Image (cartoon, rainbow, N blue to C red):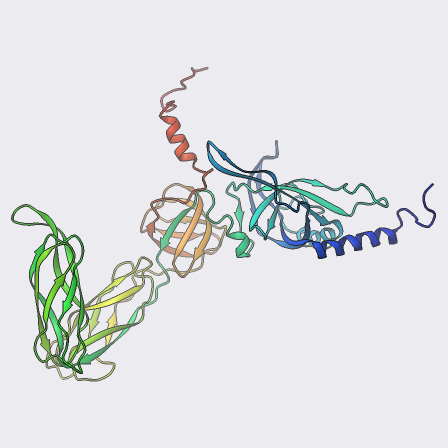
Length: 463
C-alpha cells in the first residue's frame, strides 16, 4: 500500500521534484548551447534532407552523464586516416527546455519540431570546443517518478560536417566548421579609398643613384650599401629593382640589377657617397650617386588607401620657384590592394626647405568595391556565372571564403551577393582549396577513374 502522506502525483509534488532537478543541474552541470536545425530543402517522399542551416544558439545547463571522458569508440586509426568517434550523453531539464527554448524557436521558419529536443539538432560542448549531433532523445528516464517525466537525456555523436551552414553569431561555435568541407578562399578588391602621403625636403642628399653596370649571376636581390654621411648628417638607404632572365653574351641566363630606388635620400653629404651591392649570389653590379640641395628626402605614407588593383602613379609638385627639377617616385601595393611603400627614383632639386612641401598626389583606385557580404548568402560571378555560398568575409584582409561552388570563378570578375548586394572584384583565387579529410571526393573519383573508365560506356554491360 502506498504511503498515504504522499499523493503520488500531485502538481505540488511534481513541481518540487522539477525544482530540485533544475537546481541540481545548475550546480553540477555545464552550460552547453542548443542549436536547432533549419530544414531549408528536403524531399517529401522519403524525407531526405538536402540542405539545412544552423543560425540560432541557446545556452542551457546540462549534466554530463560520464565523468571519465567521452563515450563511443574514441579515436581510431583507419585506412581513411584518424577518425574521432566520440559520443556525449547529457541530461537537460524538461521544464527549462519547454519554458525557455521552445517559445523562442516555435515561430522560426523551417524548424519542424519545437516542443522538445529533436534528433538532428546540435549541441555545442564548450569544454571541448566541439559540436555534437543529437542522435536519440530519451524522455522516459527516470521512469515516471510521481507520474511525470522531468528530464531529457540526449545521446549525441560527434558532428560530421556535410556542407551545412553554421552562422550563429558566436565565434567559438561558428569557427568549428568555417574551414570544414570544400572551402575556397578568394581575395577581393577592397573598398576604394585613395592613398595619401607627405614629403620632406633636405639639403646635401642623394638625388638619384645611376646604375653603371647591371652585373650578372644574381639569384636574389643584393643589398645596397651606401657609405655613411658626415657627422650631423643622415645616411641614405635604398633598395634594388631586379630584371629577370637576361641572357649574357656567353648565353648564361641570370637576374641583373635594373634600378636603385631610394627609400631615404639622407642629408649632410658634401661629396657623393660610394655605392656597393652585397649578396644576392651574383657580382659585377656598380652604381654612382648624384648629390643635390633642395631635394625630396623621404616620402611618408599617411594612408595606404584600399581597392588598388595595380600600383598607383605618384605625382610630385615641381619646385616652388620654377627653378630645378621635380621629383619622381614609384609605389607598390600588397595582395589586398593597399599601398605599402613609395620609393624615390629621382629626388629632384631646387625645392625650398619647408615642411609639407611638395604635395604628393596618388592616383585613385580604378575599381569601386561596395557592401559587406553576409554569411550564408549566395554570390554570383559576373562573367563566369559561377555561384557559391559565403562561409566568411574578412573586411580587413578582403578574404572571402566560400563553399558549395558550382563552376569556376574568373579573376577580374565581380562577385555579387544576392542578399547583401555587395559587389567586389575578384583579385586572386587560392590555388589549393581547404578540404576536410573526408570531403576529398574529387581526388577519390580521379583515382577511381584510373581503374574503371565510365566515360565511354558502362564497363559492366548495357541493359
